[in-house]
Length: 361
Image 1 (cartoon, rainbow, N blue to C red):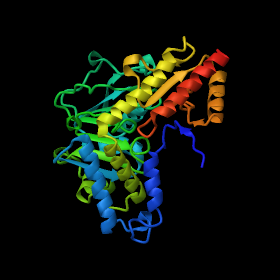
Image 2 (cartoon, one colour):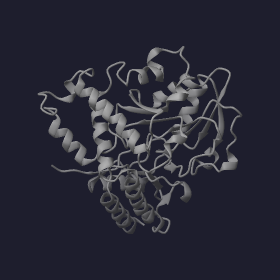
Image 3 (cartoon, rainbow, N blue to C red):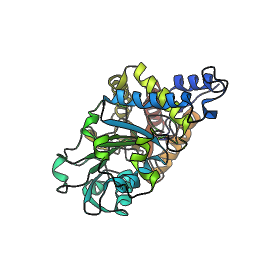
């Protein structure tokens, strides 16, 4: 079997040990004579998988009682609407801090439902950084403050939490959740599509403070109420069972290699390898994000012209490196180096970058 170095932005690569375990259990899950995909989501076997996944993610985040993790469908994009449907009353305003394309989509969706205030934005700087504290203007008594912790398209990441006072803090962590330790108890709600750091496409994780749930809107469709899924332990309707199973295996893998402290060290080493290649290229490669806002998950950069960028992607693919084209909306190059990507892959890419610059510079 031949494998490639996978730098896709999502669906992204999964840890090889996870795929191997899933492969071994695919036809016969733990002696049950069938796949986990074929079992009822009401079976004791699947309920154990679901419960274990919730326990593992709360443990990794250091969350005790008072928080729940639920597994739903629709991706993070569905959460752009589900969040304000539940927590943005008609009499209130939600604050949004926008640092890239996904933050833009989040506030646009919220504005379709209620009052959404742009509390901070770096659009004028082409989303090359996160805003300074003095650039963020929050609403008094806002319903919540929302931000995107890592923008995959622009390659911009927050490296410290914004200060929001006693307002509920909400984050879209789809592309950097569980990639470093942080104080999850500061948040009222976190959501993340699984297909970057947590598992396969099709599962969305929502972690929320139960006390905040008491104020949620009860007059919205049943499926869109967070309370529905909390009350039913994510089993109100048929969940993406195989996706949750794989997510649980990824959580186990993270725990076994040392948890979030070890993951942060591994991810920093990967990112440093690529940013060193960019900074040492004498301007041949130009990083998009400013140094203090650089993402450890999505390394974005440009070459002298688009023709060279296309050549770079083509030659990289021929060398066994896939997924390096930048998002269609911005172009350029993007190397997505989520948790499952290893340091050796980044070293190989850095070597390729050096060779390419020498030949074409």
